[in-house]
Image (cartoon, rainbow, N blue to C red; front, side):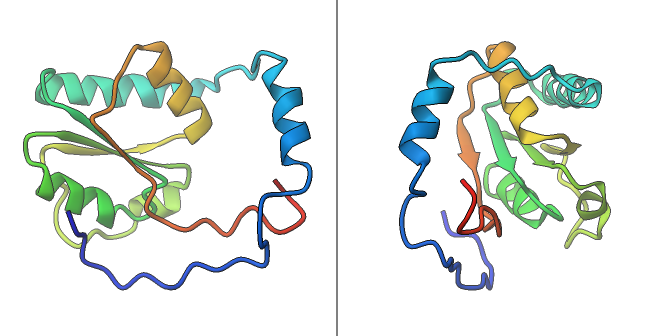
Length: 145
């Protein structure tokens, strides 16, 4: 599938894996992730799953993670009319900006932190049919992981 677009070139001053990546991964792998879920993320996940179940609980699920203003979510919903698409972004400002067309019936926009949202989907036993991360993120900078 090809999405229409005019994406800019993705570049970085970082020319390889972060020098501390291996040590950080080893340290984190040895300890369970204990960050509590934020209440707004719990509510967002519940609402998103309810929208999916209300549309068609048998429909395969697509996650458009970090969807920004949601154009990609709209295109994915149009390209996969038999799937349900969750467009998730942490920015209410981006999610409420104008869309190119009305939101298709098989899509919903969700304001949530992706770390919590991914964990909540996993906790609910949700299996995605497709998972998209389409937008370049300006982080991490060269000194960050």
